[in-house]
Amino acid sequence: MIEAAGHVVRSRSLVPRTGSWLAAASRRIARGGIVPFVRVVPAMRWSDWVVIAALWILVAVASVGPAIDLAARTRGVQVTRHDMLLGQLLDAAAWLVLLRPLLLVFDATPFRPGVRFRSVAIRVVALLGAAVALAVINWAAIRTIGPFVVEDPSLLRATALVGFRANLTDALDALSAPLVAYAIMRVIIRRRERDRAAAASQAALRDARLHALTTDMRPHFLFNALNGIALLVRVQPKLAEDMIVQLADLLRATLHVGDRHEQSLADEMAQLEHYLALQQMRFGARLAVRRDISEEVLGALVPPMLLQPLAENSLGHGIEPKPGPGTLDIVACREGDALVLTVRDDGVGIQHAGPVRERIGLANTRERLALLYPGESGLTVEPALGGGTIATVRLPFRLARGRDMIEHGHEDERTHQDDVETDLVPVIARGTVTDAGGGGTR
Image (tube, rainbow, N blue to C red; front, side):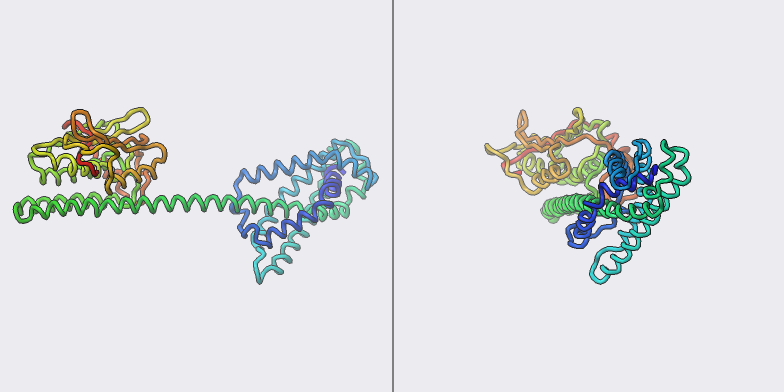
């Protein structure tokens, strides 16, 4: 036979003894709930088909020797290695052509209660149809291509090996092969789906936690701001009114962040400016703010409301308790692959030895950094040289490219960021930055 001979021998040598067990095992997998039903074909990648084809061809080539021996023993036909290899490869190619339609039928006939008998009947009919199609392909190839490629022309007259009935018998014997392939692919794809679902679940939990942390920050600073305004309502009503207007601008900028987990440093500084303007009204001449923001880092991605809690901590625990004026320094620069942000004050400093007990602002910021950049970020709060306190944030330096940001919405993000960068040009020239410090509790 040429091609068909290879198929016949392989079918009888490799499949009949193990095929029934493998087919039964695949049916048990499908029925027993070991692998919940998934549609295989839509989930298969092109690389899956390449692997299946490679394995099928590898099995065909590896079975050439045993197939030659079996053909001589059971059919009484001597087949050359060349002719048997051609037969095996033809058989493998025919199966690969028929495999996708078969798998589509299996996908459409799950073994579910109420439709199990119908699914079995449809699959049996599909398998029998595939066997007939395989026999036709092999028989036709023998008659059309065989005379041009076989080494031994007498092989074409060995009907016990290359006749249509022989081809059909061998095709029926090999029907366990597509069943096994389908069962294996179901297991693989189910595992992929489980891993994908687990990753999506972890991402959803992380997003929910980040959203909760960001949401926690808003009432925290709002409470502190309103508390400061309340102290001025009776004694300085005009100043209190101006602070309420400034607070409204700050809230508007904060709400603009939405559900984003990152934004450009330019946007972050613009929001911080609203907050600092509010505090400038509150502290008056007592507060001087210096900024030193490197222009190359304005497009770097940072978590929203990253600098505000650090500045708030410095003002509330460092400069406010200090008699006389105080200075708040805010610095942003790049160090290799890291973005370094510092907020420094020359206030009363940390008033006790040992670790700093962190309140909502710092604790929240630290946790958000850990969630967004696990193992790649850090926040330190320590006494500054010359007095006061310095808070330093280190995180990976990544530039925002248009809307390639971790966000959900805001169609005008790029325009907004460009406006902010323009607004910050005069801010960069004003001065220097670092962090704030203060009392024992931060």
